[in-house]
Image (cartoon, rainbow, N blue to C red):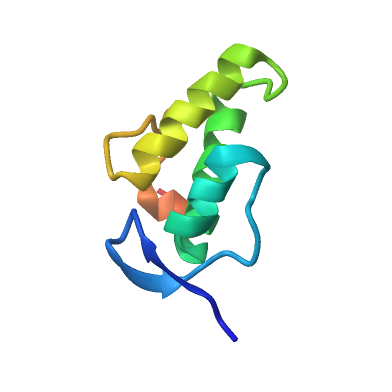
Length: 95
C-alpha cells in the first residue's frame, strides 16, 4: 500500500517516502511532509550544487549550505542554481 503525505513543496497529497531519508528530527520531518517526487527532485538539485560548486559534503559549511538550500527548495523559495544550468539541459536537451 502506498503511503501518502501532504507535500510541503507541492501543497497537495502525494506518494510519500518509504522511510526517513536520514536520522533525527529533520529526517522525520522530511518523511512526514515531503513527497517522494519532491525528494527525488531535491536529490537531483543537490547533486548539481555539489558538483558545480565543488562542495565537499564532509565539510560543516557545505552541509549547512545544503541544509539551507533543502529547506528553501521544499518551501518554494529561491534556491541557488548551478552556474550555467538551464532547465533544458536538465531534460537531456543541449542548450
